Image (cartoon, rainbow, N blue to C red; front, top):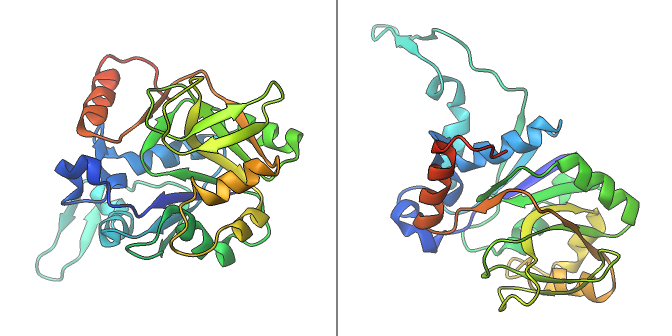
Length: 253
């Protein structure tokens, strides 16, 4: 199953880092957060990645293009330019790096990948959150509900999209960044049927607004409720908190 990672935003709330690198490249425990996210999916057998790039896309491209060298010890012969790694770092991932526009919104980035996605159910997330979520459980839940979109609901502080959910896990209402009423927010780990892309108008479409609001209104959006660990890097404080959690050696993902 293809994994789409939205990786092109400006990350203005954490400009201490994003003035130099794109948000998905912010280092957590010595490697970019996007790599941690990809490892979460890889651990459940999902290794075909599509990175929807935008702001400072060249930084992400260069990292993965030079991944073997950057993550190895090596020697260089300055005479002939030959580079010889002392060990080879290998991951059986297929990574598709696709520019989706500097100013394109989240929905528009997904729509630009329509031809790459084809007619398959796919996975979607953002490039800034880690979790101990069981990805395959979410997929099985999605299949059992038979709906167009499954979103993962989590319970961190307010400032994300709030989900109104009934006792059948049907999403009755989707609102972006309201005052939290019942504690469940958009955790950003989706399973989606390809026809959802037709609900996205163009580059100006924000995924979390009109497209998801529309499918909620026609009862095609359900929520997988995750009570476990989830942490989003939205500010420097968020990054520092996650680094402290890792240092405490608590189980993360």
